[in-house]
Length: 502
Image (cartoon, rainbow, N blue to C red; front, side, top):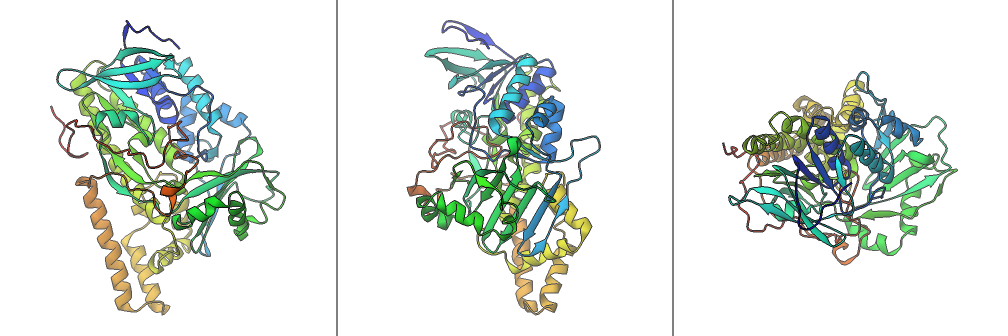
């Protein structure tokens, strides 16, 4: 872990800013392919960050490839190989079916442990790691292409040059800000989330994962490392101000109001203070430009209640490294082409899940059509496994389950049961179809705009942090209303599907 003097300029093949999950895993992949990588983070490791720590089975498989699976096992965290899911009395319980030869399920490990494992692995692979080092600025060439970074460590400023700079620095990405990356297709969160850990929780005959929705109430729980049992409550944002004023009693009340967890927590005791955030806007960011790119939460964030952030960061880093190392390290034009192509892949891969997460996290009761669609899925064992196991671990597109025939079947059942007239059902189906058309259109013609402001009293109440599972941002106390999407007068491409420059 070296640091140069102010008078020296270093070179590397790739500079990665942000050394948590997406950044550290990317650095490992790149180093294994023979690239010289400088990995920078303002934090020192091991260190924790605001996160629920849950990873889906798809992410655990990549962690096994990275060589940290045995360390994960050593934490005592059980694999989440089954989940109990109840959405408004719809039974969606299912086991987790891993891919052949892969770990048996998801896992929850605290970030000070997980991030530390990845940093250690990166160092073993030869990555040049710069802890407690701050990104001061981007170095640009005469044509405006990013050619490196300006860093500061213990008061000393210096430069590192590289053909590619990658921002893996989380939702408040400094790389995105300096590059002038714009946000698009943004959404406002309708829920906030707080969570805490319990010990001495009974595990007799109970699955390691739980998700319950009862009307507007949403509760998620899972077993973690060191005997912890993590419980997340996610009320509507309109309740945030009152909830925050009465912590921790408000959290304890909401946990107690989940009947499905009473048996699980009958012997348990809360051992950590509830922490959380009220500001969880969804967004995509322009994620590639001349000499720079964004991965993980720096480039895209979806509602966290479907717990895909960490696994998606790992998947993105693996794909990014594969694409980048397919071209010569010093071929700047080729690097720009492949990073733009990766950006298009990222959007195509993330968009269906982005809207599914947004729909699942709507506050208040589910709509009649949505609830009936869940009942149709719940009545079909194969569809239930596809939805809860495959879709929720991002191994299958939600459009493979939320198909027109299933939606039509739900509509027919609403009419036959007398819940809706034919006209009402036709309106619900048309509204849903129109919404999907707009969403698919926005994938190819993005709607640019700043992130929405906090709602539901959150703007007037200090939150404990604005990071979440999957965030690579160690700044857990950063201001929730930070203008993440600000531009800085840098000319950027108009959208992810604009043809790359030759």
